[in-house]
Image (cartoon, rainbow, N blue to C red; front, side, top):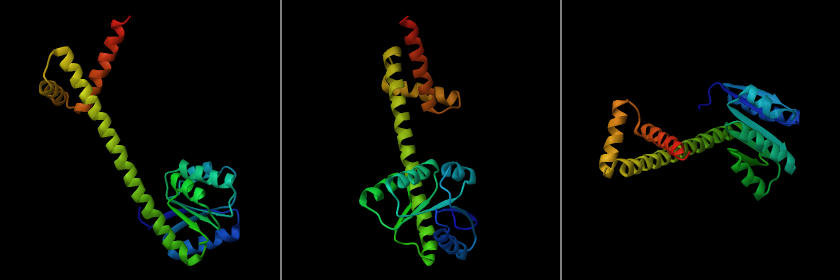
Length: 200
Protein backbone atom coordinates (compact mmCIF):
# COMPACT_ATOMS: atom_id res chain seq x y z
CA UNK A 1 0.00 0.00 0.00
CA UNK A 2 1.70 3.20 -1.18
CA UNK A 3 0.65 6.77 -0.43
CA UNK A 4 -0.23 7.67 -4.03
CA UNK A 5 -3.95 8.01 -4.80
CA UNK A 6 -5.00 6.76 -1.38
CA UNK A 7 -8.58 7.30 -0.23
CA UNK A 8 -8.56 8.50 3.38
CA UNK A 9 -11.72 8.56 5.50
CA UNK A 10 -11.73 11.08 8.34
CA UNK A 11 -14.32 10.70 11.10
CA UNK A 12 -14.87 13.38 13.73
CA UNK A 13 -18.11 14.70 15.21
CA UNK A 14 -16.41 18.13 15.32
CA UNK A 15 -16.21 19.60 11.79
CA UNK A 16 -13.51 22.02 12.98
CA UNK A 17 -11.22 19.26 14.23
CA UNK A 18 -11.99 17.13 11.16
CA UNK A 19 -10.92 20.03 8.94
CA UNK A 20 -7.50 20.14 10.69
CA UNK A 21 -6.88 16.49 9.76
CA UNK A 22 -8.33 17.02 6.27
CA UNK A 23 -6.06 20.03 5.61
CA UNK A 24 -2.99 18.12 6.78
CA UNK A 25 -3.87 15.23 4.46
CA UNK A 26 -4.66 17.42 1.45
CA UNK A 27 -1.39 19.31 1.88
CA UNK A 28 0.43 15.94 1.76
CA UNK A 29 -0.83 15.68 -1.84
CA UNK A 30 -2.06 12.79 -3.96
CA UNK A 31 -4.79 11.82 -1.51
CA UNK A 32 -8.56 11.64 -1.80
CA UNK A 33 -10.20 12.63 1.52
CA UNK A 34 -13.77 11.96 2.68
CA UNK A 35 -15.00 13.51 5.94
CA UNK A 36 -17.81 12.04 8.06
CA UNK A 37 -19.14 13.82 11.16
CA UNK A 38 -22.13 11.59 12.00
CA UNK A 39 -21.55 8.37 13.96
CA UNK A 40 -24.93 6.85 13.02
CA UNK A 41 -24.41 3.82 10.79
CA UNK A 42 -20.68 4.50 10.69
CA UNK A 43 -19.63 0.87 10.12
CA UNK A 44 -21.99 0.59 7.12
CA UNK A 45 -20.72 3.92 5.71
CA UNK A 46 -17.09 2.84 6.11
CA UNK A 47 -17.79 -0.49 4.38
CA UNK A 48 -19.62 1.31 1.54
CA UNK A 49 -16.86 3.93 1.07
CA UNK A 50 -14.11 1.25 1.32
CA UNK A 51 -11.31 3.71 2.21
CA UNK A 52 -7.63 2.76 2.20
CA UNK A 53 -6.95 4.39 5.59
CA UNK A 54 -9.25 5.61 8.37
CA UNK A 55 -8.53 8.57 10.65
CA UNK A 56 -10.78 8.74 13.73
CA UNK A 57 -10.68 11.68 16.13
CA UNK A 58 -12.52 11.11 19.40
CA UNK A 59 -11.26 14.08 21.45
CA UNK A 60 -12.36 12.86 24.94
CA UNK A 61 -13.97 9.47 24.30
CA UNK A 62 -16.13 7.70 26.85
CA UNK A 63 -15.96 3.92 27.08
CA UNK A 64 -18.96 3.34 24.76
CA UNK A 65 -17.60 5.68 22.06
CA UNK A 66 -14.21 4.01 22.18
CA UNK A 67 -15.74 0.52 21.99
CA UNK A 68 -17.87 1.56 19.00
CA UNK A 69 -14.82 2.94 17.16
CA UNK A 70 -12.92 -0.26 17.92
CA UNK A 71 -15.83 -2.18 16.34
CA UNK A 72 -15.32 -0.05 13.23
CA UNK A 73 -11.63 -0.97 13.26
CA UNK A 74 -12.45 -4.70 13.56
CA UNK A 75 -15.12 -4.55 10.82
CA UNK A 76 -12.73 -3.35 8.11
CA UNK A 77 -9.18 -4.59 7.68
CA UNK A 78 -7.64 -1.20 7.04
CA UNK A 79 -4.99 0.98 8.70
CA UNK A 80 -6.70 3.03 11.43
CA UNK A 81 -5.21 6.09 13.13
CA UNK A 82 -7.06 7.00 16.32
CA UNK A 83 -6.66 10.48 17.83
CA UNK A 84 -7.64 11.09 21.47
CA UNK A 85 -6.96 13.97 23.87
CA UNK A 86 -6.42 11.73 26.88
CA UNK A 87 -6.02 8.04 27.41
CA UNK A 88 -5.29 5.19 29.82
CA UNK A 89 -3.48 1.86 29.54
CA UNK A 90 -6.69 -0.19 29.14
CA UNK A 91 -7.85 1.99 26.22
CA UNK A 92 -4.49 1.68 24.47
CA UNK A 93 -4.48 -2.12 24.91
CA UNK A 94 -8.07 -2.39 23.66
CA UNK A 95 -7.21 -0.25 20.62
CA UNK A 96 -4.16 -2.37 19.74
CA UNK A 97 -6.18 -5.59 20.13
CA UNK A 98 -8.83 -4.15 17.81
CA UNK A 99 -6.20 -3.53 15.15
CA UNK A 100 -5.67 0.22 15.48
CA UNK A 101 -2.39 0.98 13.70
CA UNK A 102 -1.63 4.36 15.28
CA UNK A 103 -2.96 5.57 18.64
CA UNK A 104 -2.17 9.24 19.05
CA UNK A 105 -2.74 11.05 22.35
CA UNK A 106 -2.93 14.86 22.21
CA UNK A 107 -1.45 14.90 18.73
CA UNK A 108 -3.97 16.71 16.53
CA UNK A 109 -1.71 19.13 14.69
CA UNK A 110 -1.90 19.64 10.94
CA UNK A 111 1.83 19.15 10.34
CA UNK A 112 1.80 15.78 12.16
CA UNK A 113 -0.97 14.26 10.00
CA UNK A 114 1.27 13.09 7.11
CA UNK A 115 3.86 11.33 9.34
CA UNK A 116 0.99 9.70 11.25
CA UNK A 117 -0.52 8.49 7.95
CA UNK A 118 2.82 6.97 6.94
CA UNK A 119 3.21 5.31 10.35
CA UNK A 120 -0.35 3.90 10.30
CA UNK A 121 0.19 2.36 6.86
CA UNK A 122 3.63 0.99 7.77
CA UNK A 123 2.41 -0.59 11.02
CA UNK A 124 -0.71 -1.99 9.38
CA UNK A 125 1.36 -3.60 6.61
CA UNK A 126 3.76 -5.09 9.17
CA UNK A 127 0.94 -6.52 11.31
CA UNK A 128 -0.96 -7.72 8.25
CA UNK A 129 2.14 -9.54 6.99
CA UNK A 130 2.57 -11.19 10.41
CA UNK A 131 -1.12 -12.16 10.47
CA UNK A 132 -0.86 -13.75 7.01
CA UNK A 133 2.33 -15.61 7.99
CA UNK A 134 0.63 -16.90 11.15
CA UNK A 135 -2.37 -18.09 9.13
CA UNK A 136 -0.03 -19.87 6.70
CA UNK A 137 1.81 -21.60 9.55
CA UNK A 138 -1.50 -22.66 11.15
CA UNK A 139 -2.69 -23.98 7.79
CA UNK A 140 0.56 -25.90 7.23
CA UNK A 141 0.33 -27.45 10.71
CA UNK A 142 -3.27 -28.49 10.11
CA UNK A 143 -2.29 -30.06 6.77
CA UNK A 144 0.63 -31.94 8.35
CA UNK A 145 -1.70 -33.34 11.01
CA UNK A 146 -4.10 -34.53 8.30
CA UNK A 147 -1.26 -36.20 6.39
CA UNK A 148 -0.06 -37.92 9.59
CA UNK A 149 -3.61 -39.14 10.33
CA UNK A 150 -4.00 -40.39 6.76
CA UNK A 151 -0.66 -42.24 7.00
CA UNK A 152 -1.76 -43.83 10.30
CA UNK A 153 -4.99 -44.95 8.64
CA UNK A 154 -3.09 -46.58 5.75
CA UNK A 155 -0.62 -48.25 8.14
CA UNK A 156 -3.49 -49.65 10.20
CA UNK A 157 -5.83 -50.70 7.36
CA UNK A 158 -3.35 -51.68 4.63
CA UNK A 159 -0.49 -52.97 6.79
CA UNK A 160 1.95 -50.51 5.23
CA UNK A 161 5.10 -49.08 6.78
CA UNK A 162 5.21 -45.30 7.35
CA UNK A 163 7.42 -44.65 4.27
CA UNK A 164 5.11 -46.85 2.15
CA UNK A 165 2.03 -45.03 3.41
CA UNK A 166 3.57 -41.66 2.58
CA UNK A 167 4.75 -42.92 -0.82
CA UNK A 168 1.19 -44.09 -1.59
CA UNK A 169 -0.26 -40.69 -0.65
CA UNK A 170 2.38 -38.91 -2.73
CA UNK A 171 1.88 -41.18 -5.75
CA UNK A 172 -1.91 -40.76 -5.56
CA UNK A 173 -1.48 -36.98 -5.37
CA UNK A 174 0.82 -37.02 -8.42
CA UNK A 175 -1.55 -39.28 -10.39
CA UNK A 176 -4.51 -37.02 -9.63
CA UNK A 177 -2.47 -33.81 -10.03
CA UNK A 178 -3.45 -32.71 -6.53
CA UNK A 179 -1.76 -31.76 -3.28
CA UNK A 180 -0.90 -34.51 -0.76
CA UNK A 181 -2.88 -32.63 1.91
CA UNK A 182 -6.01 -32.73 -0.30
CA UNK A 183 -5.59 -36.48 -0.93
CA UNK A 184 -5.13 -37.02 2.83
CA UNK A 185 -8.27 -34.97 3.58
CA UNK A 186 -10.32 -37.00 1.07
CA UNK A 187 -9.03 -40.27 2.52
CA UNK A 188 -9.96 -39.21 6.07
CA UNK A 189 -13.41 -38.03 4.93
CA UNK A 190 -14.05 -41.32 3.10
CA UNK A 191 -12.85 -43.31 6.13
CA UNK A 192 -15.14 -41.32 8.42
CA UNK A 193 -18.12 -42.01 6.11
CA UNK A 194 -17.30 -45.73 5.93
CA UNK A 195 -16.88 -45.85 9.69
CA UNK A 196 -20.29 -44.18 10.10
CA UNK A 197 -21.80 -46.73 7.73
CA UNK A 198 -20.27 -49.60 9.72
CA UNK A 199 -21.78 -48.28 12.91
CA UNK A 200 -25.34 -48.37 11.68
